[in-house]
Image 1: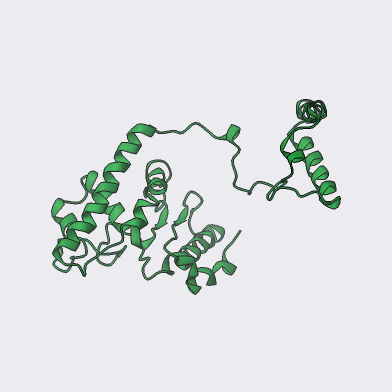
Image 2 (image 1 turned 60 degrees about the vertical axis):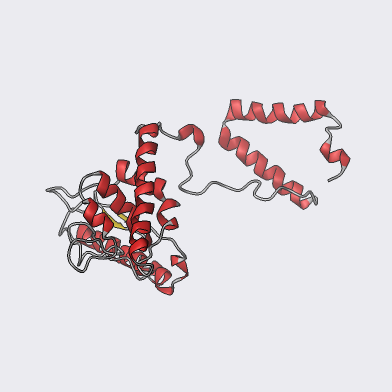
Amino acid sequence: MSERLQNDVDPIETRDWQQAIESVIREEGVERAQYLIEQMLSEARKGGVKVAAGAGANNYVNTIAVEDEPEYPGNLDLERRIRSAIRWNAIMTVLRASKKDLELGGHMASFQSSATVYEVCFNHFFRARTEKDGGDLVYFQGHISPGVYARAFLEGRLTEEQMNNFRQEVHGKGLSSYPHPKLMPEFWQFPTVSMGLGPIGAIYQAKFLKYLEHRGLKDTSQQTVYAFLGDGEMDEPESKGAITIRDP
C-alpha cells in the first residue's frame, strides 16, 4: 500500500463524502444509502479500483442486525455456570470410562466445542411433547452424547452409577455410546450414528411432518425438527443426498 493511501491527503474532501452518506441515511434511509454505496463500488471496480473483499456483500437471509437483536431472555451468568459444570462432567464421563478400559474411549471435543449452542437450545428453544403434539424432534450430533448425559445428571435424571458406566450398557446400568433409542427409549428420539444418519433422517422427518399437516391428518405446525451436524459429517454422501427432496 502506497504512502498516499495510508495518509489522508485531503481530509476536507474525505469529510464531505462522510457527511454526504450521513445525510442520505438521515434523510432517505439505510436502503437508499446502501444502494448508492453499491453503485459507487460498481463504478470503482470498473475504473480499476481495488475494493476490499466482501465490500458490498449483502447479509444472509437469517442475519440479524445488531440493532435488531432482542434482549437475551435468560440469565447469562447462571447459564454459564451451569454450562461449565456440564462441560466438566462430560469430560469426566469419558475419562472415567477410559480408566477402566482404553478401548471404551469417547469423543470429548465434539461437545466442548458446541456446548453453548446446545445449552441455549435446551433452555430457550426445544419444546417437550404435550397433549397436542409430540413436541420438537431433535437429531443430536452423535458424538456429543457425553454432554447430554452430563446435563441429565445435573437434572437428576441419571445416576452416578450410570454415568460411571458410560459405554458399558450391556447389563442395563450404563449409558449407550451414542444416541440409541432402542437401548434408551425414554432418553433418545433418534439414532444418529453412523455419521450421516442424522442429516438424512431429519430431512425425511421434516417432510413427513409437512405431509401430515397438508393432508389434514395431524396438526404439526408447532413442531420443529432440529439437526445438529459435525465432526466431518457433511463429507458423508448420505448427508447431502436427501437435500433435493427437502421443502424450502
